[in-house]
Image (tube, rainbow, N blue to C red):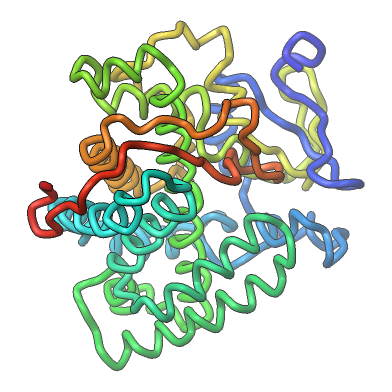
Length: 377
């Protein structure tokens, strides 16, 4: 792509849905920091998109900071960041450890597991549910609905399932407030109504489960298949954060996203971008731009895995902590874990946005359950 097109690549997000993919790092940073020329509001674009378009559920307008601009963006963003600002990272660390140990105990005596369905997905879901004050029975429906939206398969039904579960959660939190993100957002001066709350929660769940799961799994895959990490992390030479930093550069959980829609035809880097046609940032492509990628990842946080500018992920420190805890707990408990199949037999899930395996089967020596309180066997 780079050799043929340079930094801007014409693509189809789905049949008959053209877009421009940005694979140049410096150009992506410029676009992400210029919401006046490149607003995130898709409403004009989506008028001509069929309702059954598989990418529409991910891109269509919702009253959230992700899909809005100007004062509307500021209002939603402030409510979300205020909700996240009250999160106690020490409590998240304790929660993630506890959930990780309880999940490891469900498969450690079997000697085999699928780390997505049995570990990364339920861990990400449970931690997000706890931060949002969401009971498990509501959270299960939320997770199932979000999975359908990300897959683009029965996405409309998935969003319906998700919305109904969130309405139930909002009613619960209005009746029984707690020390959680949902309650803080409900009490914010922005005075979000129930519909607005549903959409903010969709973003929080969307960002807190699927990409979190992918970050954990993609990093575990690197550790289990790359000798630099397999020897280093388990042997104490390299830290988990080194593997995380490399994955955030080379294999980010969102490969392509951060959509914007030029207000008017724009000449950028010698290419005309049509008005109101999606401009999608390829985080994977930009991170690997030879102009900026020098192959040094340890401690390097210049990647675009969290986005940049006014729409950058507001929960990156929480996400990083959860991923590190999940990986550390698993490798501490099962240090001899290895892939159950060759890497070329692993299947990546379809979809233009995420970078996600369908499963990650592993084997390991059977191990007794860990002590849930201390995390020690």
